[in-house]
Amino acid sequence: MTGSPPAPPPAPAPPAPAPTRDLLLPPKRRPGRGESPSASAWRDLRTRPLVLACTGVLLLMALMAAFPKPFIAVLTHDSGRCELSDSRVGPSLDHPFGFDLQGCDYLGQVVRGSRPSLVIGIVVTAGALLLSVVLGLLAGFYGGWVDGLVSRVTDVFFGLPFVLGATVVLVAFPDHGLGAMTLVLVALGWTTMTRVMRAQVIGLKDADYVQAARSTGARPLRLMTRHLLPNAVTPVVVVAMLNVGNVISGEATLDFLGVGLQYPALSWGLQLNAAQAYFLDFPHLLAFPALFLSATVLSFILLGDAVRDAYDPKLK
Image 1 (cartoon, rainbow, N blue to C red):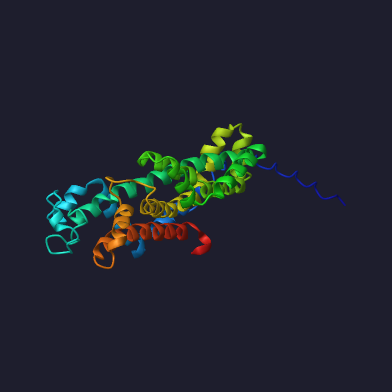
Image 2: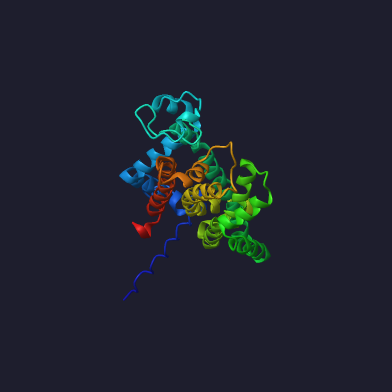
């Protein structure tokens, strides 16, 4: 009786595919994974009526700040001249906001006062965002003494109240202007965003796609700017959007207290300061700049909340 034939040798396993460039990309950037989180968030934001309303308000305020003359020409009969005989006259059809203490058309003054508040709010937030991104990247990526130094400096500035710290500095330099006020607010407004950026980088620096890029010899600068920054910056941008409203309200508070911008500059805070003594007899002097200020700050805060909800999957 003959034995059974020997079994054929097993077929060799196919060679493992060579690593492709997709392995070096974050998961959300790989093709074939469906809609990216950014596209999903953008689609969600476009369907929210509150987002559209806040965007419309902010766009209107931005256009008023950039091009005040067309708005003044359309909305009121502002001749550009101030007559003391019209001082504190109430609203009318030709002058919907009435006149201020100097007899100037109040609607025109409120429109002109939007520029310093919006400029300071946006420039301060942009400067603080840039500073926080750089410091947060360095602290989170390198750790060690770099992280310790950045964290201790952040703690020191974080302990300074925003408005109180700015008041102390601005009182010490009474001849300050718009630029000096912007620098002071940037110096006091970067701490929260730096902490958020640092935490995001620490959570992402050991991710698979970062380790894969590191194994191919990517330099630290490329790792930070190409792989970590695009995936860590979104929460910081959301905080920055919320911060714009806080900066605008802080700037108005400083103007109201008399330590911010000074006459003959125009701002909503200065108009509120001038109107406080006449509120009971001439409420329009306080109501209209307060309305514009509140609408702008509230729009930034609500828009920031909506963006945060859209990008955070836990809140959906």
